[in-house]
Image (cartoon, rainbow, N blue to C red; front, side, top):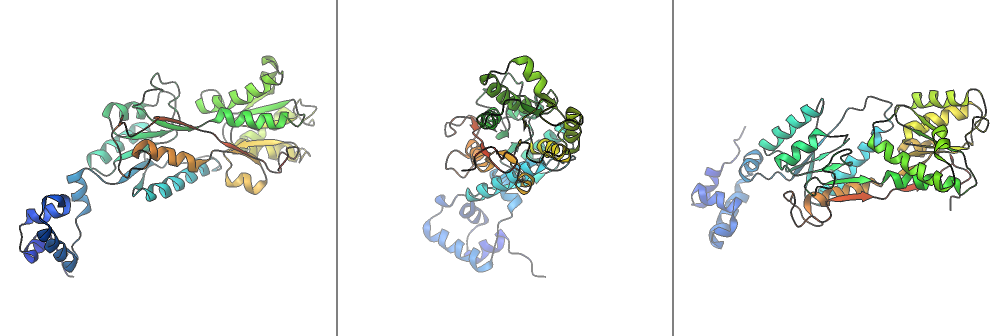
Length: 356
């Protein structure tokens, strides 16, 4: 097997020192034109390629963004959201000359350890944090260490939510569920129920608030909102059981429901199964996330516009048009927090809503 050419081989072929070859590779502006041309000709002739790991350690630039790939241990419906986001992020990053590196971590502490390893090895220039939670320790560590990052999701419960050094991009779930509820109300439905997650989810509470505001604007008081509210873990089978218990063998109308707006497509799928098996296939149900499952089943859903989320995330790392990660707080990054408006996609599960 023929050995790969080295810097020394290039230097000998071009009749220059190893340092001159290094300068041509890393700081060509300091080398005379004729010398640079001679070295480049030797590089091309020998087929020399710089060692990527050594170059990263020397320049501390990898043109790579790290993202943890979490394990989805439920019904897999909502996991499609992250898959779509990663696809959009990789596609738009490639257009900026950046790559995406996926890595695994057991929990937040392990993820922080991975951040440290990736940073110290110059393997990534920045990270995208997903699945943010209340008082997220990952955000605190990244901000303290001044490691470039952007969070997909607001840092719920943090006193630093408006800190420009803690950039985030999120989808306006409040606006999405409010629009879905308003559409149903606009068709004459009044008792529109809410199927959300148990307390403790900032995202879930934000989405419920959008439903509640639209209902309150229609004259529904706080006591009735509580009656119309259901909750289940984000698993279709559990959502199905919850709705079945609410129906109790009755028709949805007799159970006090005209329609359901749900915090996710997993919940909406469970709700749809429950009402259809009860003999009411045209009972209106709206989900959230616009997953492939919702499209396949004709389930109306709120689309998160993940292409816009990915574009905004990259703008918060690279600036509007740049191709290199900027340091935290750089003036080239405008508006460090972005709230992306979603859009309602109407399908057969809300037959009373116009499709045109």
